[in-house]
Image 1 (cartoon, one colour):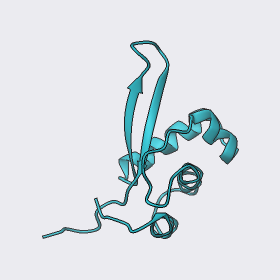
Image 2 (cartoon, rainbow, N blue to C red):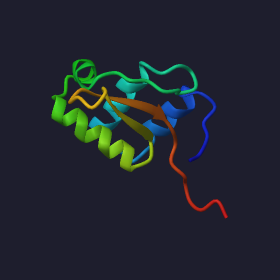
Image 3 (cartoon, rainbow, N blue to C red):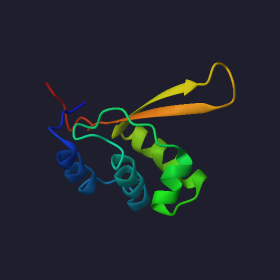
Image 4 (cartoon, one colour):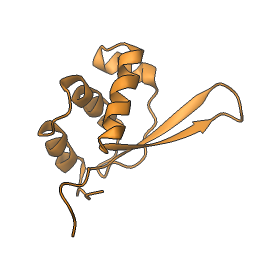
Amino acid sequence: MREFQNVQDWYQGVSQSDLAANTRLVMFALSLFADRVGAAVWPSVGTLADRTGLSRPSVVKHLKLAEDADWISVKRYDANGTRLKRNEYSLKSPEVGDAA
């Protein structure tokens, strides 16, 4: 993971990335809940859908695409074995090229 100094640096990277436009939209909506260093946030998929105007399934798809591209990390929690789940997201930047 490449470190970024603050969320502004992360915005710059996401905006110049090859992520699909709706994936970038979801990332920017997610970042509304982050502090200046991108620490863990946990908005619901419904909240992100409301903020982006996308459907819940679309938000889930774009969160997965961003996770696969290494722009976010996701920790998944369940509520004491029930069906209710909560995801905790952290902003990060993918490695660019080899570090060797």
